[in-house]
Amino acid sequence: MAETQQDPHAEPHQAFHLPPPSIWPPVLAVGIALLLTGLIINLVVIIIGAVLSVAATLFWVRDARREFTELPH
Image 1 (cartoon, rainbow, N blue to C red):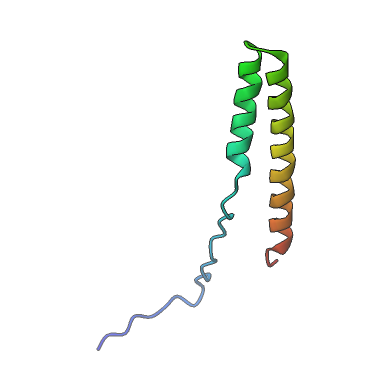
Image 2: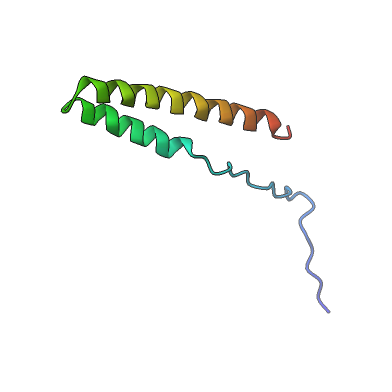
């Protein structure tokens, strides 16, 4: 039988790394939507949207940094 020969110089395939699901992107989207809606409605809605957007961004970056440090190098 014919055997297939593998290329000795072929690089091994590396596994893809996909980040785990996160709640922070949708929370950031809601915060931005509230911030923009607040431009039309009320200053209070702007403040809530801004606080929500900043908090979601900080938590998302925190989770991404934690995940990055746990990756094998």
